[in-house]
Length: 374
Image 1: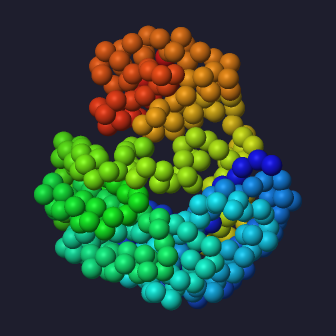
Image 2: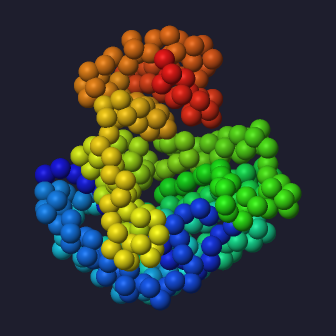
């Protein structure tokens, strides 16, 4: 029985953040019942395939899954178990926004089998949270972690963002310290990406807000690496840090190109070498549109993806596994480019892995392009 990870997209949210480019729909909670019925139907359609798989991780993402009624979440978890075999030690994550949680909801989610909570804290500074259009305060983050612990969650992750408008390195260090004080098992620390078409992009273009420059953003990333390492969080991916053994198993499946099935609008999948997705639009999904843009990856595409995704990990790319899968000695095939990159201090080959250095991870896309161009 082969392993599978399951992603379920829940697109509803209370308000659209200024930087958000995700498939999320504020003020559409009235469509929740129809949407959850559609999720159940889509899950049932995959039952023949799921019968031959063991679901090792489940991730409820959004949007704001924690905005949904606890009964709907419990029903969804029951449908997942009815359609496929869920491993007894499966990692089951729910994304949640502080300010949408209650002790009752958290207890119900824990009873439904959710065992990992990913909290969208983003900042521990009310001024910056308001600038982002977030609906919660730093106090709500602290209260949410306390409620999660009381409900029995022993695996909590905090999402943080840096390079925010008006954010100094001192501001970022205070957010890091405040996050560490809450003792989460996992921390994700991402640089703000200003996406075209968002209010944030319009504000930047109009000069209404200014962002830290590239050197300041790199400095903030290095601040995170240093402060979190000192607090016992090991960096295992460009933007992710964990206590020992608390890495996000679901996201590791993405980076290691394991099979995963996405359910819901805008959900992406990789199954048996085929990538496909559901329509981004909520209305299209509710109308029954499924599995668009299916594409069977070529051998070259699989090789490129393996390089691109695995070098995001601090462990790097397993050269023996690469050779076994593709019949190519990567080091020999890319000897010249690897030599150039190593001389620049961006990559190293050791213990059977191709790894990016600290400086290499800061320019990971450029390093991958250099290797692919050879």
